[in-house]
Length: 451
Image (cartoon, rainbow, N blue to C red; front, side, top):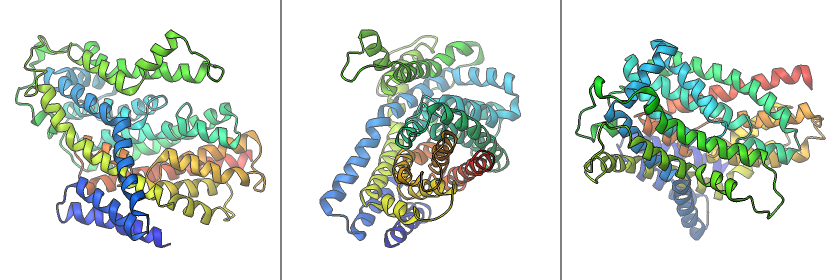
């Protein structure tokens, strides 16, 4: 309980420091990381190592993605490409259905693509749609964020559900079927939350930190790139990542076998950093005439990189905070304290939710909970294919609850959507709580008829 109390106090410190004292989130998160580690008795050398590993590890996985995504977003905005995308999309969905459009796009994209990368890639589209529809940026941003979460945590081939299925011996086909059904219900809940709650919080799509740092005006309508050309910098990286993921899932190779040159190239191009870099190349085709000033340190690319710096350091600090929490062993403490509770199919959800809330990583929450649940399946009578699949999906539902200050994804969503910390807790954290809980209820209802 002492570790839990320290976690609560750490979150309170971050909120007070950033909201009341106006401290930069990077410094608040870094101080919280060190204070939590020192107070809970984490050895000082391990504490420093955890901070460095968390900060560097987070940026290692999404740093280049964030920078490249920022550059693509700037080119889309300044050439008018984002506006072309928005006009085309709104013709299909209607001006009042931006959250639904973003939720569905996020739901599809996150099956092969990690949430962080998907949100960075699609954020410019949400901003353009919101600006054209003259609505709050918050509704589409939260619909996109929660849409990405729905499949990321519950539907293979994302790594978390695949790993949990392997640990628990669940049939992947059953997991995909149940996960798809439950995730659709979760998507509907998240869309309603985005429309009824998030859209009521007004965040101007005009207040774009990337655009405001670039002095040139947006291209007039007659000189804008067409919709298809504007779509390429976004869709091309996603296609590469999807192809790579599908090949990894379907191509079976013996251990140590050479995959061959074709697969090596596919895997290389499907790496998010490589795919997004190629997306930057596509973005450079958007201007009517690309000049050296645009790609210089004082031009569009230079300003985009400067603007991305704040997002990078905050996201990295969030990763450092989460890593310190993991190093403290708080996840295992919570899991072990709950595994003796007789809660049926709710047990994996509650354990995963507690671990996710405590240390920030959905994947860690899924894998840790699966390891704790594995020896309990037989005593609980959850040994059939359907039962094991329901446990996997219940764990995935719990791994959404809740995304807050110790989750790097929380900082990606808030920073790319111009949200304050208070707005982030109100929208992203509450949204993930509702989405995960609705998914858990859906699993429970299915279990009443199948287990």
